[in-house]
Image (cartoon, rainbow, N blue to C red; front, side, top):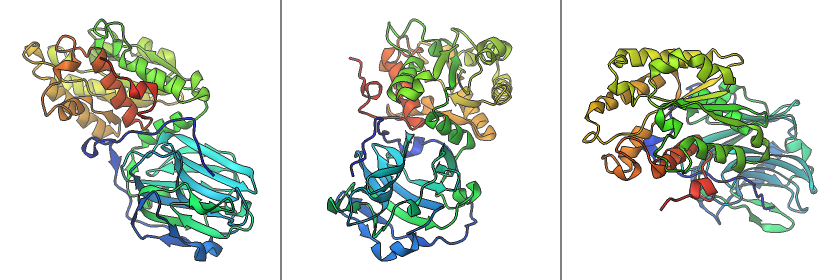
Length: 432
């Protein structure tokens, strides 16, 4: 079976600039009924046949599938593990990476009992642990120790009759006896449990654990419930003047989220309340009208460029303001997730009054680490991708990103939130 998705695959993140995560816990849950820990690199043709162990999982009505892997390609369907009936078509229980997204499906003689995919993507070449738990009341997808998608369907191995084959990196049936959906990349571990692991237990067996806030953002991306995303900051977020008529980074993100991620996300809204010349002092004072009034679920804050050149927002004030803003976001009715974004570096030859900007960026990093906030570090990324120097070709006046700079900001934001696909119109966009 070819599993095609309507969404797109994620681009690779530089390892040194990857999304922050927490170390996995040392404790381990009770042993799985199947635990294949032979690390292997699969080349899109190779596979591991574990059919002699199919009796260990056949008939399970509930339990957990865990896979630790890293990819080397972006194929429409790459099987992580599949149990199937060799003698019939379309009878299988399969976990795979489908155009970047995590997919879990259960079919019995062509009848689809369950088929769900995330919008967040995991074919970025980084090492991930994913888990799928099935109870009598539903199915939960975990990625890197955090729940990212929950459905009401409750079908596991017991929902597909006469399973005779069990494979890593391919799926087989009567129509594809040689296999299909071959995997490219490394699979370090495949484990199947005859019980549902708790969230803590899933974290314990994950090679890395994302921040709680990152898991929440992923859940919002994967949910069909409408959400308000709010971006705020200064003239950069405002998109004032220097975009030269092109979209700002917030507008590019809006297109990626509200259109390219599919119809259920059309009812999400992205609101930009960036105001030219703003500092953190201004946002603290105007929080009610610039943030609270819109009842957001995610609040992105990019501030610091003006703070670094304003006497009234010295380093200590800036740090205190960021902490207060994070607390204010978390305290919004119904709860909201803060997201901090460092401002881009500037040309200090043209803007010598911004020499302290790097110190303010460092403070934002420290606050994010201290408070467990997701951080998108544009400042470090811009320098790292330009040999350690400020990429002047992305700036309109040496300080404000121009249309190319805003696209660069947007792609970094989209990539770090794991919804990047080089084939999408936003992600593939180039500006001459």
